[in-house]
Image (cartoon, rainbow, N blue to C red; front, side):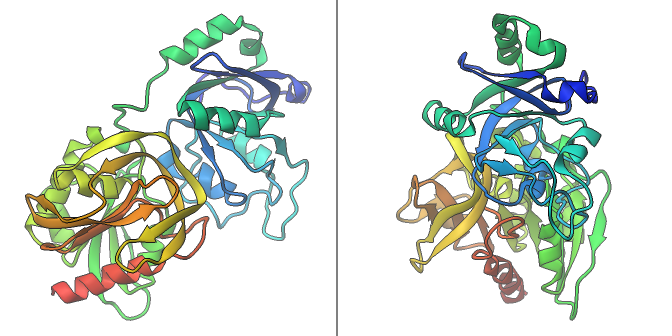
Length: 384
């Protein structure tokens, strides 16, 4: 959210807007939603649906999202699909926004919600060309400039983009984590209680766990080891979240404490990267990351391929074959992305822990990975 963003007048809705990439490429379009300046890392999301979940996913903190689907906003905004209590994107790029939403659950338009939350957007951009550029050149910083800012010389706008914070080294966990613990109670027969470390958790995730009979205590990322282990008596879940995994040392210590205590651990996305670091593995930045709801991942044990939802720009470096010796015993890569062979899952052999790089809560997205929550419950019950 830009501090100098301001709600546009009716006349400004069709004003010129400029999109400037860190490498000097410029795209011109029209202002949309809020007039102002947005700076962040440029990333593209390939989902044809689920823009409301994308906008409210805390993992997009500090990023300007380019939607590759040409029409965005067709179904408006509803009261059910938010994944947190606010939009987290730094800016929003679309080709053709809907003029008027059409869906029985819609309460208002996407543009109205973007304005209410002061998210700077740009429309009428060739998002196909922009996505191909990012795919070829890699993720980079980007700026959206509209209103008076769009009239400045491109050289001045480019200087602003290049002075913006980089995602490499960014510690964003404290920006998105809950301030106070809260409970999502078990549904049906109670099967246990776990601690969920909120690194940028989506609301559907504790919901999926509670549906399986778990009391889920969602805890701040700054929680002490003692509180985590006391609360997570039956297991510990580490959520998705934004930023560079190399910056989250306290979370690594939490995860190592859980492994030492032999508490069952399940990590997703950023939590997967934390398990990798806890095991002594390195992380690195991907060229353009995985984002969207159509990424093919193979389970190396069964050979089964799942279509999965992703949102990550970093990955764990580990050998795809053979066992890995770690301070906590043996581990192995369990899943791999079929597009580029990126490590998408880890499984510990001598301690009860596993992780995946993607989002099994499927909001929005396919439900292929939903059984991973059942695997976590099974792991808890076997570990008692």
